[in-house]
Length: 118
Length: 115
Image 1 (tube, each protein chain N blue to C red):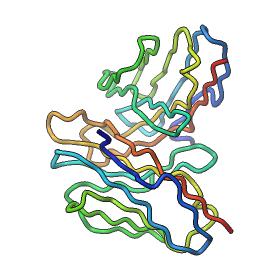
Image 2: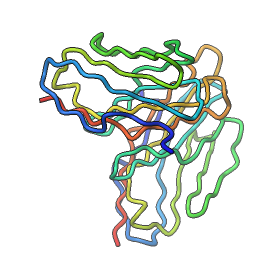
Image 3: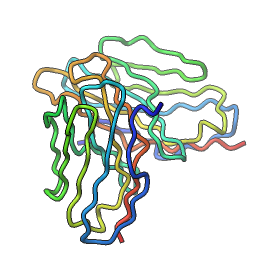
């Protein structure tokens, strides 16, 4: 079973629209970490954010914000006032950290291709 | 300064050949990884090393052999290349397995094409 599900394969928006990328995860560990990575057309993977399972505070960084909800096992990512440069594939990932888990293993979702049109 | 570097960036080769991809990180991290990204963009871990010790060895054909001469380097050698090995291979590093800041930083990727 997929540990990280990104149900949206592709999203298209017009510049300045807000867009939310969904991420649902599955784990039995009590300690775990969640991540978002961006992969622009140039191909590199850029780290955006890390959240640990004990910190449910939402985070805002400029136009980016993240909503972590343990009750629904979701870690959604919102881009406000999207720009053409936001066009990329966005990956959500999970790392489990309980005793007995394989530390460092990142489980990636299949990614969401975001296209922002001018 | 490049944090995680990989060489080469592109690799085109014939089936049956042997090739290597090199990875180096200058972040002082203890842990390094190899990932494979297939044509559908799915990223899957292949190997991880912590202080030169193999930690993760996913179900990867024996033709793939990682080598870590020191904790700043993790190379990937592939024998008898097959068409299905065509993919983008990413190297990554993280501070350490038990670090609370265990985000992984990725290299630029190596696009391998097997003809």
